[in-house]
Image (spheres, rainbow, N blue to C red):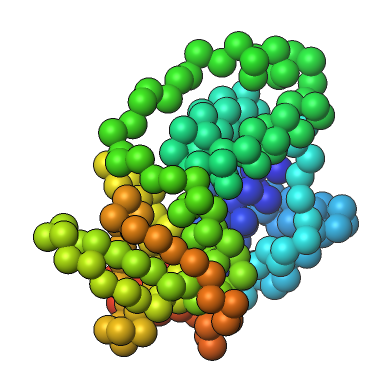
Length: 222
């Protein structure tokens, strides 16, 4: 199971030697465990000397979570519930309830008794309406009409192709392709005066825009 989690972290083929080094096991053990996972239905492609890649479609039951993983999930749900608005907070709580329902009784007790807490944040308040509209636009790959007020109080109207939201301690940012500037731009969500869906899909896929923005920012995948 640890090998499977390790494979999930890679988007490109990874050698058996690399996997063996990360896991602290022999190369023979890696080959044996990959064969065992493939027999259970895991779509692991590749071969000796080339590398291995895990294709989507094979999941572990929540029952396999360790106690530290359960605590991390619970802590993350608290954070999202406080800072993600109803559009993310409620689904996060629902997801935690589903996970709890299939845990062993012992892990369920530890989940409910977790002593890890998220303190109040100092991020500026953003209405659920604004956040929910941004979530919907990103999921649907839809252009939005943005009425925005910058740090100097100057207002502007933008058509934006939003593709990601960034959550920081003090601010939340929506990032997208700005038709006015013909370039990637980020906007603080607490300075958005109003936002609405246009009903028009933007002409490029969200993932492609996200990858181009990451490249422009110097963010490289593992």
